[in-house]
Amino acid sequence: MNKPDYEDQLLNTPYPKPDAYGSLSMPVYNAAAYEFKSAADMEAAFCGQTTEHTYSRISNPTVQYFEERVKQISGAFGVTALNSGMAAISNVFMSIAWSGANIITSNYLFGNTYSFFANTLKAFDVEVRFCDLTNEKDIRDNIDDNTCAIFLEIITNPQMEVVDLKSVSAIAREKHVPVIADTTLISFSAFSAKNFGVDIEVVSGTKYISGGATSIGGLIIDYAAFDWAKNRRLNPLAKEHGNCAFHYKLRKEIHRNFGAYMDPRTAYLQTMGLETMHLRYEKQSQTCLQLAKRLQTLPGIESVNYTGLPDNPFFELSCRQFGKTPGAMLTFNLESKEACFQFLDKLKSIRRATNLFDNKSLAIHPASTIYGNFSQSQRDEMNVSSKTIRLSVGLESADFLLEDIKQALATVVC
Ligand SMILES: *Cc1c(COP(=O)(O)O)cnc(C)c1O
Image (cartoon, rainbow, N blue to C red):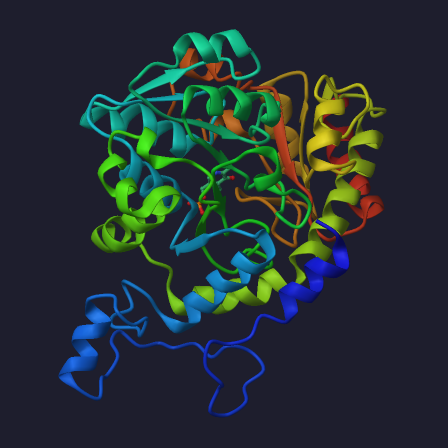
């Protein structure tokens, strides 16, 4: 995506109706319901003949404007804003899976996504097949007639594995299975999922989009590129709606029934966040690369994991897919869990907190927190080491962050 186009699109998406007061930002319509001039208008709106809003669990002007802006810059067919990244992921699978279906994925997954697959969906007889998504044969061998999707994270957290999206999407096309990608770790200002064969993109808006961790939100971005006649659940709808069957199912049934639509105040905050996301992303990712390089030289740090480092096994693939500065998250290993705890306790400026891509830098020990309730064997399978610290780089300078890291390390090393 080239930059002037991106910014011009982003800042010039018109409102669907002129604002009565000429407000420069979309007002927050904190309304539950909407009034109609006549019973006939009401019937038309409720039955989908017109696009008037009826009730804010279904659609809301402020949320719709946020969706429209994302749609303009992503080139998607349909965008749905939900009240968390997890709501986005669960709404997708509630729309496409069926009892007896299976999902091809890796066990390198965000903790709640893993739990949603392994615990929640399992109760409804949806099987999850944890594969090595860097191994084409493993993917092929696991796909069968009941496969409803390949699901992946574009850079896994905290393992930092990168899957070759073009090769996975080629297998998916050949086998008539959609590719669903969680793209939270790379901002869509720097990466076009559509160009890499992703059919449905899910994003936790809580991260880069929210503009400094202002709110929890999620997006489903649908490129209407998949022939849903090939999906057993959506096949009947595909006869009428073709590649738009997923969007139709989601908007007319699933998101209404699950009731996790985005709140208008969140949509306002995330619309504001979207306007500066590309600038924050660029700065935070550049700082992250600088830090990654310098951390490699520090005593006490056993290894640094960032796919923008030339000696990283995913470096070339990561450059091809995400450019030279692949996001603002890195991990590094110290000699033990105890060393990690000591290090975290000594940090003065970097905050001890979960979350990613806040304006402030955040550090966490994933094994004892995000994966704290997993068994040791699950953590081993997921390659979540007790020696790993995860750092989300904010808007501070690399020098400032490095000073803090050095002083905290000094207490661990001696
Ligand atoms: C945070 C995150 C999620 C979940 O998003 P929420 O907004 O917290 O529900 C999903 N995937 C990834 C990769 C994340 O980092």
